[in-house]
Length: 195
Length: 195
Image: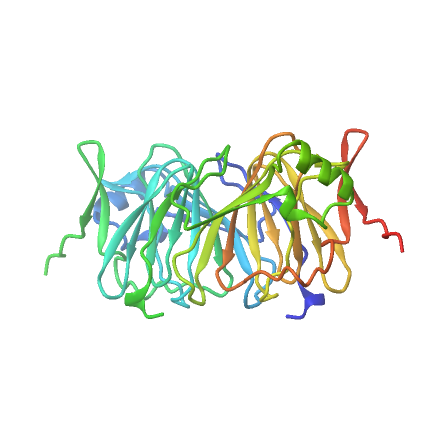
């Protein structure tokens, strides 16, 4: 990109409580039926799809200004509160296609966790909470989980080149899960599937 | 950077009203005496330095985790309210050394403006206000200005490789200034200096 071709700066409004970005250049919703195969309890998932008319689990607004190397894009992800069985609502989770690219998250409302894992098998978590920046370090796959009872609204900034690799995680996604135990969120290793 | 050398994810607390990041890996303050040559009215500047014991104009907290290509760093800039003559407190302003790198700003408290200019002479401004992301597009030099009467606290995210080029703007910095006219901020072309 040449200097004279560069996009213009601007200020873009977002709603802190709903995450809506009226000027977004891209928007999508994921309903529970889009997330088949990701939750621990497929029967609980099908029951909710059937009984609740396939509710939206999360949605995403994004603004990008160019596809040029060095540019950033930003947006919001909103994860609605709820559980499938004992497992909290989550995003699909992904590696960046360019694995060396980082990202920042900032929770605007609600609370939650990010599950992280690296291809050497290391796992960790970080908090999503208002008043904190959550640093999505290079090389870590990441999935966000809403452990609160209100929408979890996250503002994110990412390199436009980072890209998404949803395949790198394989089948059900992350090695760990976030489930409710005695009314509290608990991070646990995913149980082995029956043979 | 190899996957196994990557920094770990984390959540980092910041104070919305003061901008303080207790875990910052870097911090600096700029006093009015550090900003000689940037304001329209050098006499008003020297008077304030003398009479107010050289107050802090702005300060900066940053967190970086690596210097590797593809990584992001983030932090806060706090511009204290005040004017030098009729000109509002400002940051020095810079191009990114790697001109094609973007940045995002998010005002957490206070209000202000970013002055932008490109090396072809084009200028523009964008608002800094809570509830908005301000997009610092590639190739644009940028200076932030506090037009409010409280600290302007800005959370920023930037590529670790972007770097700072303070020389590209030359002497006084930007082509435009933000001054108070009848109690309101006004963006004006910088007056020519007397020969």
